[in-house]
Image 1 (tube, rainbow, N blue to C red):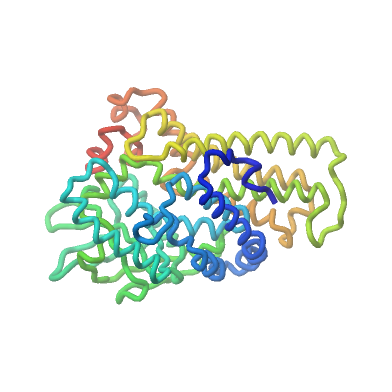
Image 2 (cartoon, helix red, strand yellow):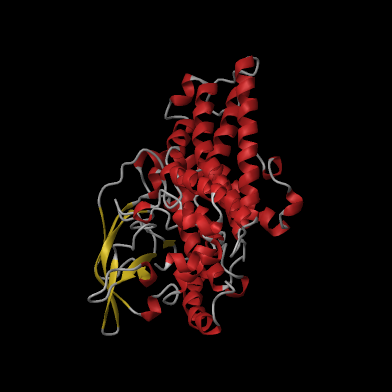
Length: 436
């Protein structure tokens, strides 16, 4: 299996981050890799992997040090997520859901466009979430999809309505990763008012405990890939929440997220990891170093060597762009930084599927067997390009629009029917657009 020194410039990575990257690789080699097949076969949640991650402190990865966390940047989190993905894609993908909730509270609080009053209201809310993750080792999920509803183009169909002492939430979430296994769900919903159509600017985020009355998990989970995410349906029926349950105060989500667009590509580390894992397996297979397999050296075949060269070049290009994009992750990025971010997301999601497909072709028929991990990696890799909010098709559109149109022309560019470009970055006008 590859080492972080094989593909990262370690002089640009803090020593304490390097130590955690090596630790997660140790967990991956000794524990995650061996469990991955059973998790995939049974479509079961990686409970033991989460126990290991929690025991080593990884649940606090993005939490500021003053609250007991590690204070990792988005760039540093991405590297950790990618290393997990080398061994178990489902663990890496769900780990992102937990860390996204922590990251939203961490990085959006630091946005320069928040007023002192907004930060004062935000501070106790985020501290509550941080303390839970550190002291209780609480795991968070972040279900957003609603099945057939594009939450980037229209307000969330899960709605909350004001009642005495708080709100009542009604709705459902599709593909709710960690369903039944997390401690808290970060619920994105729309506050509705009598006589008024639902609006994006009325988006609210609440943290709902797994045992809250009215919350239930339903449905089967038998997908193509990423089977261990346990992404079943989450039903909310008159779930009561109060102001103490807010993830962030009213209005801050719409004021900050459009100006922190890198927050929406945090699925990509998983797929960089899957691609690297597939490459590593292929190299070991061709060397005859796979445990339980005959020690046959297949490196003498020119066709296989050529394929390995092509794949190394593809993976190196993917990682270089992806690493640069996450290194530039911050609030209020430039247009060039956003274009690189979109290009990185597109290249990773498309490239992971290409890499695993080529790895199977290069290794040959044995690699199709479920007893070997490459077949699972192949199926896992097919899932990335269709994940909202930044599917490959959306990235193609966004890249073309930002490349072809000046910022003051974007809203008049064809193809925005039905608000299809609601999640498109619009520079300094982003927050205003998202509130429409």
